[in-house]
Length: 277
Image (cartoon, one colour):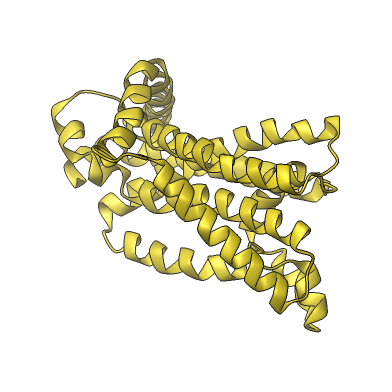
């Protein structure tokens, strides 16, 4: 009898968790508006607005592209688009992890005062990052015009790749957001870890760089970095490069595992978040 009751409780809890995701998505007018307002509020009274981020990203990409192409004797026409796209994608992933860990803490007032699903705040965060990504992609468009690459129909895989990354941003924000509301040390820990991962991820360097430095044997170890696979499925089609199926396989597996973890976190701790914040 006890087992049946526990099973029923777990089933209802899972339904509430998935119900939170569905209810939050149905309120898309709310989180679309709030996400856009976040951008407008941050750059209020600014002439260029969010394009300041575009300028900063573009300046960093050009500086790093020029510097490392000279240091490692790489073709600027190949390395500059590579670095630029890597930085643009990295900024989106980095913000989703770090801001995701603060997503519920930052919305403490709304969570306690308005009876909205928790997923509204996560969707708002991911939507905001998509807007900034759209601003930053302008940099790559300019560089692609200067250094044109051959395109094919296979490059349209950039669309499902972007959707996959968005799905991952959602579960990452849920998992780290819930953990950070309970344990406030998670945020600073993630900031240190993400900073380290930046240098361990092929953004400003690539496999050719390792070969030139006599460190080609490390290329297999680099494959253990999951962010490499996320970068490649989106960067490769935009650069007109050959796409490795293994990157897609890894990302799909991580997406499934991540959403399972998010579902468990929502089932167990969704009701406690308003008390923890």
